[in-house]
Length: 143
Image (tube, rainbow, N blue to C red):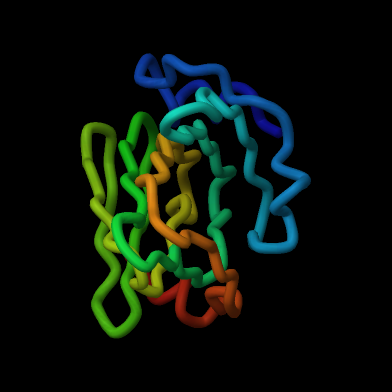
């Protein structure tokens, strides 16, 4: 890890500690991510940090009712994309509301660290389904 580049990319917006390597979910990421669980009661909130080029696989937050996820971008540059739609660039201060049952992915830009708070919206019969990786070909098309 290049600590100086990380500090430059994440800047003063990185108010929450990065946490350790995200080993529990490593199989669902291309590249290295880090996870610091901020809350596991009432509403689950994790601070997720991505090294440059790191992204998670396509996935769906299923729910009978409620559910989904909210991303609160805190630092760096990243991407969010829903299946069948163009990717959208993310920067600190952006908020992404991801409805339940929508296939999507998110992660860092190729040249920047990226951090967001991932807020799990309480759900009835909620579950996560991890799907295929975002290919290098798809990812490298992003500006």
